[in-house]
Length: 443
Image (tube, rainbow, N blue to C red; front, side, top):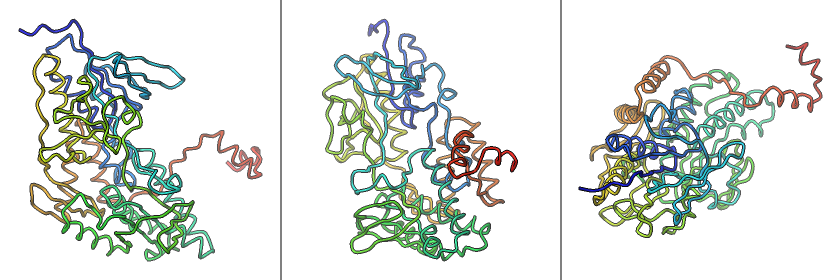
């Protein structure tokens, strides 16, 4: 009989999809182990189902409905809303900071690192001048900006300004870049009816990919289908075309300059900075190197999964950074952590991909499911259904289905969500020479 310690503390870092899935599985497996305490540390009190973020940006889905509050998804896990600052792997302490400078020191026996990744802004000079697309705030800000560009283009008599406002560039032809471009083309098709002075052929979309083809994650034939669909919508799709530099409202290629009112960077990711500087082994991309059990070889009490981990598959190559892999990695690492707590040997992670899917907007997608290629509506329906059931609670699933049903009959609205509070708006008007008394009379 294995004698358990009086108390075992398991700390999960990161409240993304992988971190929450790991905490939920740890809860299930330890329900009869009262000595096990689970803590989840996350910067936000919600997690985002990223594959649904594209539709939230286009308006087919309410923005909050692509996210799930963390607390209702957990039963007995202690949740701490704070930003992870550092992990002392020798002393086994997590350092975190909450708003207003409140600090935490959380001791652990086992730590599961699921801190995810951020957009790589080091490859292209001037990348900070572009929008990114990783968070709910990114989706909201980009949506507001696009609507603002349409408003400016509709009102201006300047042809050059009009053309710049209606030019959209997406840098990176992976899943994120292609799915975002597809939703944006659909969004433009749906909302231009509200802008009678704008023609659809005036809206120019560009997608630039540095490698030989777009969608390197999917079957080449499906990538060709996606290219044809997007080109039929007027998108300029270019592979083997690296972007040399980005300036405000301008993109530089080799021998070509494009003026664009909207530039979105989706050209790869880098691991979270805390994960990349932990005193454990890393690969050349900064990911934590773990064995097949997702356990650090140098520090067996450290486990890692998702975008910030390099987990070797049976062929020796790391598993890709896809949602379906992160979900299964999270459940397996939870089983291994509990096995380690109980003195049993952890088991290697093995997973054969179910397939890869990419939405193209307008009820169209490409997918390879269990070796079968799907295109058009069947692929779109399968993708939506799969990600719907990745949401852990039925209340959120019903809200998503309701949004999708409404979107079948109505076009997305063009309401901008003003992010400035009243005091800021007053300061703006005062700076423009509008007196507060004039504002009051006008209202």
